[in-house]
Image 1 (cartoon, one colour):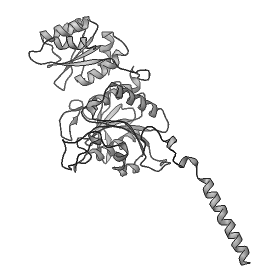
Image 2 (tube, helix red, strand yellow; image 1 turned 30 degrees about the vertical axis):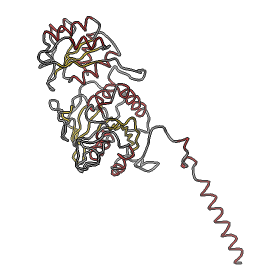
Image 3 (tube, one colour; image 1 turned 180 degrees about the horizontal axis):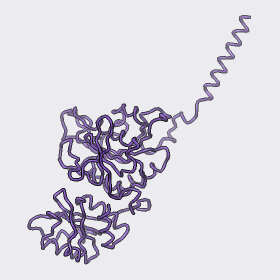
Image 4 (cartoon, rainbow, N blue to C red; image 1 turned 30 degrees about the horizontal axis):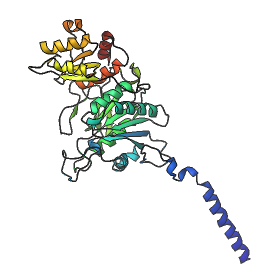
Length: 377
């Protein structure tokens, strides 16, 4: 009798082992050939939590991915050295608010973000947001040119799903690092349904700003990103509070698409100052510029010398847009300038006016139509 029981028990264990081994999916076994080219990690379980939004983090480098040997250093550090996996692991609390996964697009300081990277990033975001498996995208980015990338995405992303650009003013190794909190907040904003349809957003220092209106205003402080004249879209104080509505055209409502673009036209910025000459305009034209943004004094004013250079550039087929170096205010239309096809940037600062002019030139060279873009976007 005991022998029969032992045989039955042995058969049961064998069957259990066979069932367990067969039920393991081949997809759970790692294979070098199956690893994706981009680095992907997840802070949630493999299957994710069905009641949480699925947020993709695209990392590009910057101070938020910076590091230094000294924990007290906030300016002497190397930007873009920490990978996306480490960024996500540093904020495990994100798994409580979203199913997070990441990709390393590039890992550079934002001063090295170029047109090629902008196109790559926008195309990747559009592909991700076209999937039902992605509810929003967060882009980690250096702060020096963050507002330019954010505005580019504001004009080229073809989805109303949230796109949030985030950075930090202090490296990941600093004892006062602001990156983890900013990243957590960015994921939180990207995962809230109320963020849909608001265009590209920028989240830093517990503020939610529109990519259209926000700018970096201080070299080192954590409250550097401000929308001084138009105001923030929202605030984060544990909960998310949206206060303002974005009225300018963005994302799905723009004329711009990057799907078939491999490059963008060259647009340069010429800075206005006392005793300037026309030769900077001449140099830009000679170097192949298709457009020039003039960072003029006051209300986009040109000196006699700069006006000479600008008019000469227009006659050679180059589009010239007047902006202002002041940082705030609207550059208004001027009848005398308009007669010479010198356009007005509205309230776009020079660096954002450059972004819009590049995209506008992919659609048309007509000065009247380009002026309409600046009035609408």
